[in-house]
Amino acid sequence: MDAIEGVGLLRDALSEVPGLSAQTSADVDPPAVVVGPPALEWEDYSSAPSTGRYPVWLVVTGGDGATEQLLGLVPVVAAAIDSVDNAVLLRADPGVYPSSAGSDLPAYQFQVEIALGG
Picture 1 (cartoon, rainbow, N blue to C red):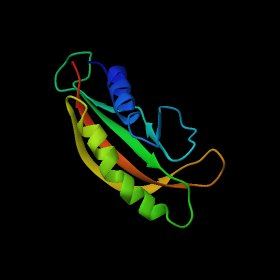
Picture 2: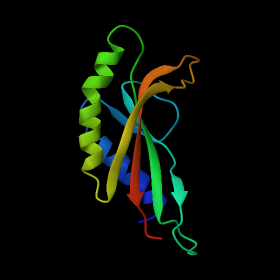
Picture 3: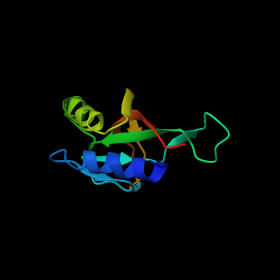
Picture 4: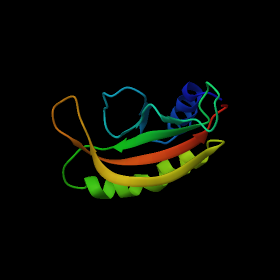
């Protein structure tokens, strides 16, 4: 598997979560999950990376109930990530997602590690 295939596997698994759109572009229409490009690691002198660490943002609209909505969706998103072969969910951190509309949106950022073919 290469890094691009990892993005596709995560996006496909997350697209199965009811009520969320799964995408790879920076513009979001919450509630949504966004799969970002991975940080890559090499374990040897191969030209192909051996591991990718993918950021996955769970994004909701701001306002009353945002925290509760995020906390309700975290286990569902985690289960979708866990369904991906060779994917290991390392952590989920609360934060904000920068919106193209100019205001940051409430979010959780998941760190997902996938073994690649390097």
